[in-house]
Image 1: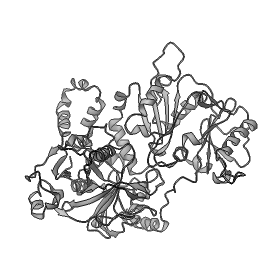
Image 2: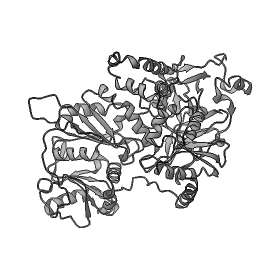
Image 3: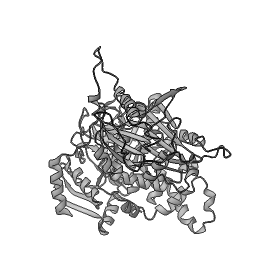
Amino acid sequence: MYKSMRQCIDELEQTGQLLRIGQAVDPYLEMAAIHRQVHRDHGPAIYFEKIKGTPFPAVSNLFGTMARMEFLFRKSQGPLQSLMDNYGNPLALLPRVRQWVPLAATALNALPRRVRTGLPAAIRLRDVNADMRSHWRARLPVLECECRIQDLPQIQSWPMDGGSFITLPQVLSMAPADRQRIMQSNLGMYRVQLSGNDYITNQEVGLHYQIHRGIGIHHTQAIESGRPLKVSIFVGGPPAHTVAAMMPMPEGLSELTFAGMLASRAFRYALIDGWVISADADFCILGTVAPDTKPEGPFGDHLGYYSLKHPFPYLNVEKVFHRNGAVWPFTVVGRPPQEDSVFGKFVHRLTGNVLPTQVKGVREVNAVDAAGVHSLLLAIGSERYVPYAPRQPREILTQANALLGFNQISLAKYLFICAGEDAPTLKATDVKAYFQHILERVDWRKDLHFQTQTTMDTLDYTGPELNKGSKLVVAVAGEKRRSLCLEVPESLVLPDGYDHPRLILPGLLVVQAPSWTSNQEDSHDGALADPRTPVKDYCAQMDRLTPNLMRQQGVAWIVLVDDSEFCAQTLDNFLWVCFLRSNPSHDTYGIQAFFEAKHWGCRQSLVTDARIKPHHTSLLQPDPTVEKRAAERCSNFI
């Protein structure tokens, strides 16, 4: 549909979906502040004509609303949706004669198309010159011009960021081999740090790829084989290429196939000296992964917190190419919802019917955006194993284990799964109804299943160290067990220091607790006391002060927080606090808790400690001066 980013921008402007800013703007914080304010108001895409320190214009909020996302892919979405919906049963498409032509075209576009350069295979990248680039202008416009890293827009979104970053990169890697196979490539969106820290200006850029990412497999293969890992970073090009970089494709299946189908145009590429060149990109950074690591970050991330500075791979930059008239697309991440939330909804809409074909019995899965996606997964499965007996979690436990081993879903920290037979109309996307269903039926004595000492999302700092934490599966099946309270029980008595209880959902209370650090006391030998002791004491006191809290009062779940009023303002506030400030193995407690045969459970209300802990990272806070200036500018623009 679109052959270039420029073509897309032109159409958005012609249809009144683009805000053009002609005044010079500062890439340090100001562009991000403008973006956040326009996105917050569900505004148009933003075209920044003049940016301080760079000759290139930039565009953001391109994918800022679902309506605009659907507009961009209005021609390709239907056929692609049909292919995805019938992923596990392609024969179902045979009777649909009218769809054969668009479906066949979509399928053909899945195959990447190589652009021949006419150069000998032995040509080295450093030998590519201006005459060659001029010769390729029509077929490989991205190679028409060269620049340096410092010439690119140095956009910094948050005050504590470690430097400027590429926030919409398309990072392509292939396993080192004598014969490269483009269909085995990996295209991912891993943030790239352009400046700051110890990177040598124009020679090195940081490459932050998280756990469970395809490029990690290629990196491992490169280390084992002793070969260099050549990486290409594309920015811009057809919008479909950006979306494809975010696609969680199965291992061994290249995202380039999805890029071609979504763009209604095959991904065009060339191979030069072992690097893949995207013919249609606006920018192309080529480099080789260094043998060591360097500190990368901090960076204000999509969970609403900073990810800290850690050793990560980096690239030794060989070349930076760009097309004539190149435009730099970027986004701003932060506490959801942001522009990347729309990416997630769009991808889920396209691929939502694929998962049930891969994990049998699973009917629906909702990765909750308000909780940071990976932190909370709500699923509906099937319970068919023993139909002649009262329903209880059996098959859904198998499905939960399968989900935790499936692609990036494996990063889920909290996974709730229930049997669809108990409520045929229940939807995992209806978070309120889903939790009410769970809390009416859950048996905290046996329905909690922990995985400890396991991997965790790289951006989640609730665990004891980077990439390390725990998981909790709550599997519920059967008849309704209890009625839930619809208001804070009048008989509720809280221990000293705990107050302001608020009802979030039926049966779910938040209680404002003393700050986590004030609950710790030094032991007699000078060591820090077990920080879990105060919460255990709280549970014991609650059992004495308000007996039978769950059975008689209908309080199934209590969440301890720093600010109960904030959590009660919106459900999204609660989801963000509860699931992004707790590590299941360390922060799950219960009234009348017990261990039995290495299984932990509780006979009364579950208690989750969702307060900020000292090892958590800082909340994202914008610079108020910059925000005010951006607001003034936006009032003139809109």
